[in-house]
Image 1: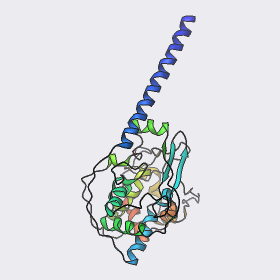
Image 2: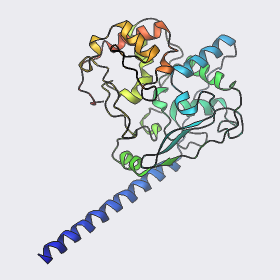
Image 3: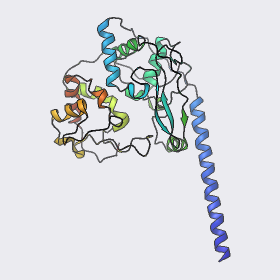
Image 4: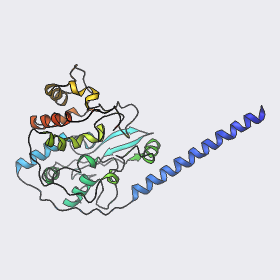
Length: 301
């Protein structure tokens, strides 16, 4: 009996020891990546100065949900604060006190938004660069041009902390958003402009902003790296019930956050306050694209 108890005790100690080693190695790998410098060359793009382009840049910024992380005033905000997961915050993108972009050149803006790295080549934590990677040069230029005109906000950018759960998930390849630059094609060629029309092709272009939550297959499921309290993203393929939605149902969700059965969606989990700025053409195009998707099991990503 005593031998059995002793063996059980040793087994527990060994398991705990191996767990401690794994956590230490996971933390080490994250720190190595966090301080890694990568050289990413970016081609210059011409920034517009006309009022119409700046206004469109502001609208695009809203539709992409940038305020969810950086705040309505672009002065930065904490968007996740759960110690096991981490403390993640969007930085101050204005030129006020605490700004992280005060010395940014045009190329630095492109590198940060399109590739998720700072001017020194270090990865930006939880920057969803994949949502912007395929954006046309013209749309990206409009966004950058507008950001450079945002009124200054005096707010220190919050320090970010990567929690043990995030470290473990990253080491299990389940948290691609932590350092998004790793998953992006650094040699990609980018389109100068895109034809705005109510087509599935244009809808696919718009849908790039949906990949982070709904996955590359748009089948939804648990969102990698989010706290356990967050609900899974909806399956947008026919097997998720989307096939029964009409265009008017879809517009209602994106404009008001109300589902076809009048359930109010929490804007923290589905950014309908951002998508309500989408035009009718954008919504119709996105709807047509989603209708072309094959059925997938929820969470198959």
